Length: 343
Image (cartoon, rainbow, N blue to C red; front, side):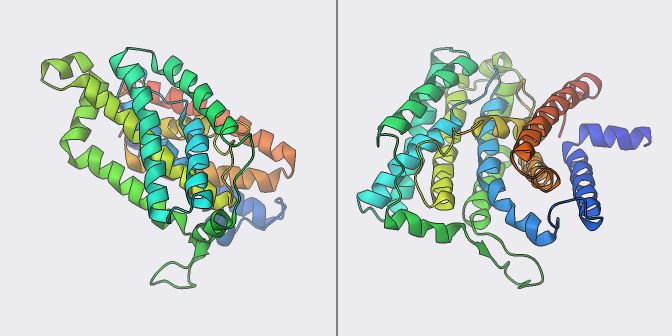
């Protein structure tokens, strides 16, 4: 690899992710063709696994906002917000008889309120984000468990939501390409477009990058640092509220542990954000990198499950996630030191 190509890969995170994504797909396809996997690693299989990409990518976009805001910004509570908001959404839509649109709006507003609490603790009271969001993680998680005595809500209206998580044929191309989950079009793409527009085309996005890069300089330039940082946590909470609706549809049930079971949703989302080029120090991050990193993690995990069936495959997924996180952090540090940032 020439010095120019190396510089491109290190400074343009999207270029690196495309290379890694192609390497994963080619490797898994080759192993599948030689019968080393338990099932074919086909285009249809890859498309079906995108159902896991919808909530992960959305939560990674939420982490993009809070990490970019700087001062150690991070949100460990997003999974707990998903659980709590999902239960309230389940009550509203599944038991109280609310129409779908108002119930979704309630989930979004409740998620935003949870994010507002995080933002108040971090931006206005000066709590370290790690401590503040860990505390609210426990609080939201406990509330999600007790509001319905640790029981899921799986009434008929909630079960019928599963139809919104089914796979659909892509428009124009018909059956030429595999069917993909509907949630990509109804939730992920709109969320990614809104976050991209805010960061790349609005004053609010420029302010967020400014406070993440140097909040002292931003304050002297007239930016309300506290309000801007608080807004990032509110937006992250609102996205988490939408993810709650996605998980209820996917499970056909409002589960009190939907975002916290196992290793939870927060750590994979943070990993994806960092892998996507979001600098943990703040001020750097792009939507395209987060989306590509999500595809990389989802398709790598899908291949691992075929290579190592059973419970061992899940453990290898966790190992791979840890390796990816370490490598991403090292790449971010190397890029910052040698080239001054990532794109």
